[in-house]
Structure formats: C-alpha cells, structure tokens
Length: 402
Ligand code: GLA
View (cartoon, rainbow, N blue to C red):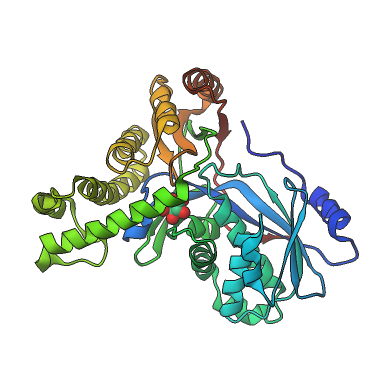
C-alpha cells in the first residue's frame, strides 16, 4: 500500500554520480503530486478547488555541467535525454523531457539566465494515475533550474512559489499542448503538511484548512487504467464550458459574469430554459456551478469536523462528475461503486482529470487493510485489472532538501 519504490537521498546522489560523473556540488529538490478532495474540472472556470499535496513526489538531484545543455535521467527510464538551452524547441521531439524543456523555456522568457544542468529524477508517484506527476516534474524542474541560474537571487525575488506554479501551468499549456488549469501546479508549489488548500482559481487567493481526520485516513485507490483519451476529452470539456459561458451570457444578459463559477445555482435555474437547446452543454454547466457551491460547503463541513457530512458531499460530487460532466468511465465507476460496500468508508469520489486514475476514499484507519484487500478483490473480479492502494500522507510543496 505505498507508492513507487523509494531510494534514499544518499542512494540517489550515488546514482547521479554513476550516471553523470562525480566531483561537483550536488543539490536536491523535491515537488509533490496532489490529491484533489473536491472541486473537479472547475479550476478553468474560475472556481474554487480543494486539493492537498501528497508526500508522493518527484525528487531531483542536480549539478551544473558547464555546458549549455540540460541533461535528464529518470530512475525508471534509465536513459539520458537532453536539450540545448539555445534551442529549447528542439526538445519537442523528445520521448521524455518535454515538461522540463517547457519550464526551461518559460524561465528563460521570465528573465532567468539559465545554466546547463544535469538532473536525475526519481518519482514515487505512479505515472498516469491522475495524481499530477506532470505538475510535480514541472515544479521540481522550475525550482532546480531557477536555483542554478546565474541571476538566481534576483529571480527568486521575482518568482515566488505562486508565480512558479503559473509558470509551470504555462509550460504545460504552451509547450506540451495540454490546456490544464492551475490547480495541480498550485498544489505542488504551495502544499502544506497536513493541510488542504482552499484555492480560488479566479484570483489565486487561498486558505489552508487543516486536514484533521481523527480516526480516519485518506486512501487512494488506483484503477490502474491509464487515461488514454485524457488530453482530447479534456480539451473537449473545456470547449463545452466555453460554449456554456456564452449561453449563460445570452440567457442572463443583465447579470453577465466573467467566469462560469461566478454564477449562483439560482442563476443556473433561471437560465435553464435557454440552456435546454443544448442538453450536453446544460449538463456541463450544471456540474460546474453546483460543484463550485459544493466546494464551499465541503470546506465548511470539514472545518466543523463533520466527516460524515463531508463524505456525503464527496459522493454527491462523484455523481455530478459522472452523470453531468461524464469524465469517469467503467473503471472509476467500478471503484466508486465497490467502495460503497464498505461501512468503514465514509465517502469516495474520483480525483483529477478522470478517464482512469484514482478515487479518494475516507476510511476508518483501523480498517484500511481490510478495505484495501476487500476492494482489490471486488474491483479485480469486476474489471480484470489489479488495482493499487496508497494510504495518503499530506506533505509540503516544492522545496530544496538540505
Ligand atoms: C487535471 C488538470 C487540472 C484540473 C483537473 C480536473 O488534473 O491538470 O487543471 O482541471 O484535471 O479538476
């Protein structure tokens, strides 16, 4: 019940020296993945989201290499990928390393005088499982390259962690062609141990909310179904909600709002007749507006310590993302439904972009073993796929390890 195989920092340093050669000062950086508790597919609609950083992460051992090249090695790929700082676009053809190159390009454009760096990556995040391994690579790379740049001190003053998150998102949007919102990069940058982050994606104002779960734990259930259609379906949803915003403007011209999440549930009801002409868009808009309201309710309930109510809201949110937003799929649906057979689980929902990936479950700590083995058996029987489980610890955001 844990993430990928873990090396100690000193083992990673030894590995770095055997891959890239020794004799240089090594620095170590780390950036986490995230779980989103609630507020799904609304970060790009100006909504509120409620993620938390995991202790599952990407760790980078790095040193300057005296060239104009960035050389990358990952402990699971066992191969060096590299690009030149003079031709970062040339990295678009790399099989691995595009997130890093995209970040280098953004840092350069922001004014960083980058140096050639050797970087060894080690991930404990399962790839393609909806836990933001890409955001974690982006933030770890951003802090590494920034820290080694010629004008590091000046740039560190200009690029605080929130700005690094925005820079990571831009890299993913512009260099990698994934039109993601800000949630994942923000959580990877700004995560805080044992806290969730209530983030307003329209303004980037945020509040830490202690995740005090008492006798309960967060358990991630990985469907182990990779999200193959992820990027195209993701961009399709974004187009649908853009149309939804236009239709809300037409329906309520006097109450024109900048973001879909600026509309209240009553306004949605008032606009319903107009939205009827496109039932798919209407369903997407309904999810977005109601999900945004649910996030605020969920955060209040969590602050008051009512975990039972919190669990109920999570289940409600899963129905919405499943039936109105339609981004779950058979495996996530199976994992959600089968979790419903366990009394020790107060609530469950898919987390992340969907079309595969994980559910997040609130489970009585004393029963986590029974929950995971029982759910494994039921899910495996139903889908033929062997799932994985991780009992989550909530950790800090991107940082240098001393
Ligand atoms: C992905 C994206 C995020 C967010 C989620 C869905 O993780 O990177 O920006 O849209 O999907 O909530």
